Length: 167
Image 1 (cartoon, helix red, strand yellow):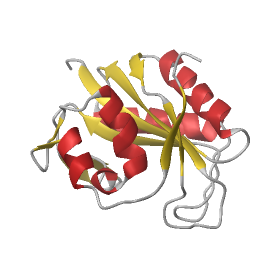
Image 2: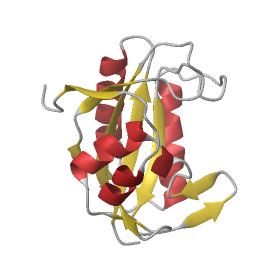
Image 3: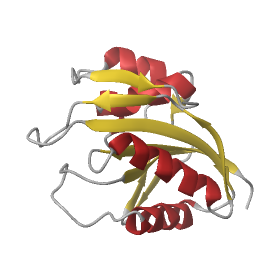
Image 4: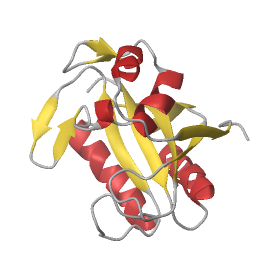
């Protein structure tokens, strides 16, 4: 299979969230058949859904891989498990969350795997770091750029840049 460009959302709000995100990105880069190309800045973000929890740190990482989408998702879930993620409440606190946002320009709708991520276009904490890396990338299901999605976004949640990826 040919290599593809993939965007992965990274988030945490437990146990030093900034370090957890950095650790997850290192783990992604150390995974066989995945090469990290770029990472967005890190953002401090207001919780989505369940409000009574610590704020999150979020970022987006761009990778190149020849892994098919299901195999890539399995690797990401393996990293989450290795880092101590446990099953929990939807939108609840988590030590790490890795979401497959975009896989090339593919639209995938299978049991347990939907690409583009079905909620990404509604979430400022995803679109802000994705916009930093790929403002003109087109959402394959909607035909609208990331910049266009961000301009149309109704989500008013707070998203503040806190750290450059190089720090």
